[in-house]
Length: 479
Image 1 (tube, rainbow, N blue to C red):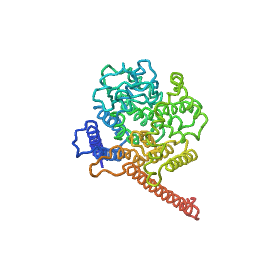
Image 2 (image 1 turned 30 degrees about the vertical axis):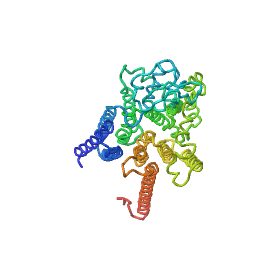
Image 3 (image 1 turned 135 degrees about the vertical axis):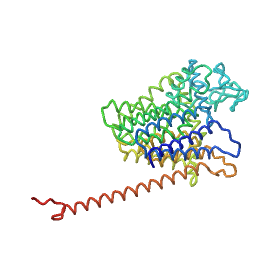
Image 4 (image 1 turned 90 degrees about the vertical axis):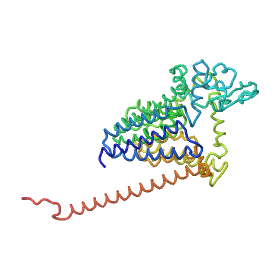
């Protein structure tokens, strides 16, 4: 296939993916057409484009990766969020802080915050309503203000860590009045594009194929969960990416400390980057741990002094609500075990995986161990919130083993299971179970191929040694 033809086919695949993202951002289908087939088609178009771009010259590839990533993000942010309402909490938390109130101090429906309501976040027909007379679960003496809102869980405190809260405040302060959801979406889309630029530079600096950046830039999840749903996870992913680049090469202690600080800030944005920790601890682990822990402590202290124990927000309630405590969260494990047994097995699998990564991960290639740790965590916890896999997508772009993206795709099987009469009975187990089988099969095939290639190299070396050792063979006769 010539370069021109390949470029045309890649552009066609990207155009198809962009059109499908637009369709998801502007849903216009009737009941018989479900979101999951559209998402699946977008993933297929993405896979085709990412496969074909590997055969293009670097210059063409870089241009297409950047332009394609930008166009996908623009398509996604062309409409308000469709698959998540988290962004409305982001805007609210930013507004509360701009009013000089700590975001962990009160729940959104507290009377102390009633004066901050507006039509964007508190429309009369909002999907989340509080009836008159409802008490604050954290302070039964306090009666909440009734009303409907776009903010999910309006009777509980925020769950987001301090760096995320600082990000919400910054975007709110920079947003023009009446700009709605666009500034938060544009900020997340910009973060996704900056991560693409970072990947292009970092992969080249590391001596790797820069075309791997397409695995992040063109992934439908990145467009939908950054440009459309504006999830703060993309900020945590960006901080983690910079941290791993710094920690992947030996150098002065200050580089290690800076990498640890950035990793700590990523964890203080969204907890999931802690999964990358075991892969970077074989080199100056004390410096990494101390700097990461110090960064987390520094950003938490002001809130701790202001609100005390309220700084943990809704995290305990979320873990209880989402089934982590009673073992119902682990859909694949639940096929064989239930209750506390499932929880113990989940903890054991994650602990063993973490220790294995800590023991065997190459400090010069932390993404490989981090991919395994993050992928196993997704397989065990089977989240129905698909954006939790954004971290994995970035790690795969560095590492290059695209089969692990199956766990990112599995999240949509769980999140959008409605297929009418063809709806899967247990979408979490089916989606993540299929991903486990796929990743295991491809990994086994890679292992067999590597062993065969190693055997062929060894045989070639032995043949060469025999030939060079035989009298008169491959020897120059003196004249």
